[in-house]
Length: 120
Image (cartoon, rainbow, N blue to C red; front, top):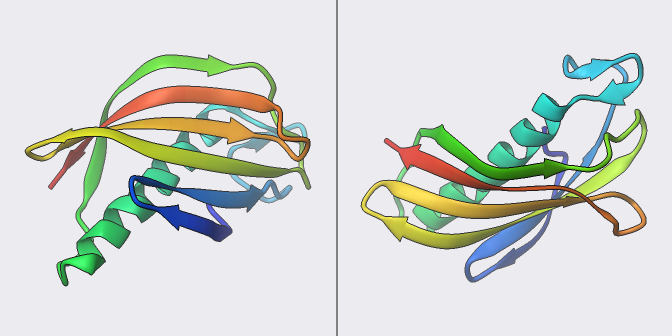
């Protein structure tokens, strides 16, 4: 649930996604909470794949082990563009702790959480 990679930074990146009516996580024209979490997780997966490619390694498979401090204030509607930023907070062995934030078209923070991702 990522349409476009906007920027890559040393410890994170930003992505963009436009909510479509055909998306499986849209109900009655509203992108659901699970969709926002999936968008954050897929943005984190792009980052993990980018880091692996820098080392000429295949992209790892990742599993969400935990969500911490999930806060969602607004659910986006269809045709709304959201921008998701992730920042790698720490990495220990095969576990990444990623801070994720989702903003709407006006730049308002609509969701955030910490993802603990296990890489295989």
